[in-house]
Length: 138
Image (cartoon, rainbow, N blue to C red; front, side):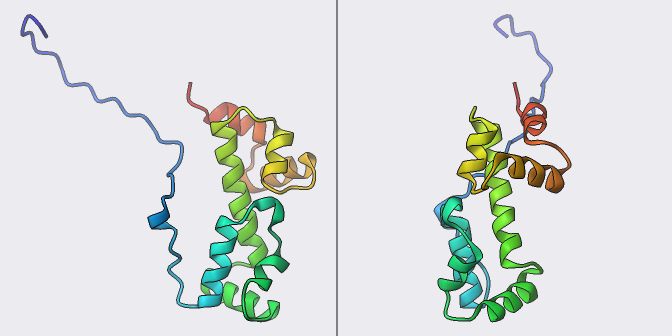
C-alpha cells in the first residue's frame, strides 16, 4: 500500500452468534393483552421461577382460556413458549460462557442437568457439549 501497489479487495465475513435484543425490540406485537402480558413475562422472568402457573397468574383469565388463546395466536402452548426461551438462553450461555452444563441447566430452570441434556438433544439433535464445541468460533 505504501508503494501504491494495488491490492485486491478481500471480503472478510464473520458469522454472528446471535442477535442481542434491545429494550426497543421487546414490545410484543399481539393484539390480545393477556397473551402479550404472558409473553412479556416469559421473556423477562428468571427461568428458575418461571412456571405455567406463574404465567397464568400474571393475567386476568383462566389457564384454559389463556392456553386456547396461545394456541390460536402463536400455534403453541404456554409451556412450549417457556421451553423455547429456556433453550435459547441455554444456547447463548453455551456460546458465551465457560459455565458447566450443570450450571447452565440450573440457570435456565431445569431441575437436573441430565434432563436438560436430554431435552436439549431432543430439541436440537445435538448434546449441549457438542453444540458448544461445534458452534463456538475460535
